Length: 95
Image 1 (tube, rainbow, N blue to C red):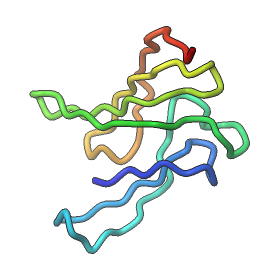
Image 2 (cartoon, helix red, strand yellow; image 1 turned 30 degrees about the vertical axis):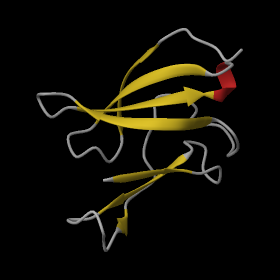
Image 3 (cartoon, rainbow, N blue to C red; image 1 turned 180 degrees about the horizontal axis):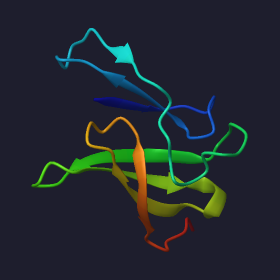
Image 4 (tube, rainbow, N blue to C red; image 1 turned 90 degrees about the horizontal axis):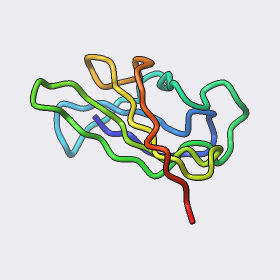
């Protein structure tokens, strides 16, 4: 799974899938996100990292720039192609 940060869709990400780290990659549907997925494109969600828990559950950790740089941890669906709606905010802001 390859997630890239862009500003051309409200969610701020495009997701690609491949069987190999060197490709070829196939773009999947724009992911559904619990935060900022229903507003115009722009600098909404950014600076992200993927995490896989010991049980295989995937998470995307990202910055919500619409909320002053708050950090969001969002659970991904079973294939890590999209958010599943479950998320927490860490309550931090950029200084």
